[in-house]
Amino acid sequence: MVLENKLGIVDPAELARQEEKISKKKALELFEKEMLDKYETGSFETLSKIHKYLFDEIYYFAGEVRTVNIAKGSFRFAPVMYLEQALAHIDKMPQSTYEQIIEKYVEMNVAHPFREGNGRSMRIWLDLILKKEIGKVVDWSKVDKDDYLLAMERSPVKTVEIKELLKHALTDEINDREVYMKGIDASYNYEGYFSYRIKDLD
Image (cartoon, rainbow, N blue to C red; front, side, top):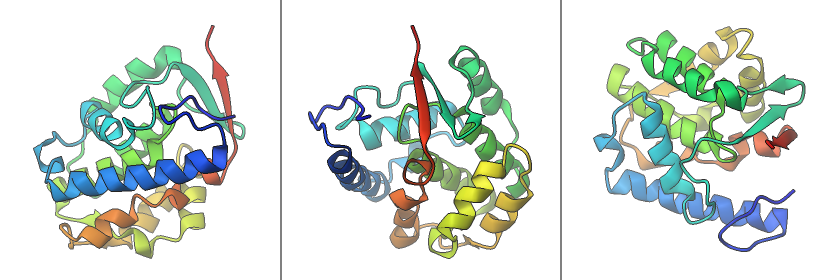
């Protein structure tokens, strides 16, 4: 299934290529223009702004909370009817320690608020919190992609794996462009690793 897009693309492989190309360009703009430093850390509003900036040239729904239920394998992300409530809860979660920040990240992943592009947006969002609260970011080049995706898949049940995995990849190179851009790599996304089931609401 190819999502409706502003580019008029009907081939899924071509859409994936253009999505990655454009979102990386926009992510670099966010970094180089120092726009992220102006955002409130840890809020859904900030995540929404990041998502909209990355994907507004591609999708009509950029920055907007999804109106469909989605599932990965046997795991269902937060149902649409409870999504706003879940996001309000996440906004209130503490984020002063590394453990609290990752707990918040896991909860946002369970919410999966957007129809597409959650992974890239959330990794920028996560690093923004880590940078402000503990003076660190994740060096994604030190995170094995398969280990990360499996740890994230299991994180709703136990967060130990993802906490340990990312802890060993923390760096104080918080203003390094290459470190930042590695997190935008689409190969860290569920979309290319697990299959999604999407049900449009009536």
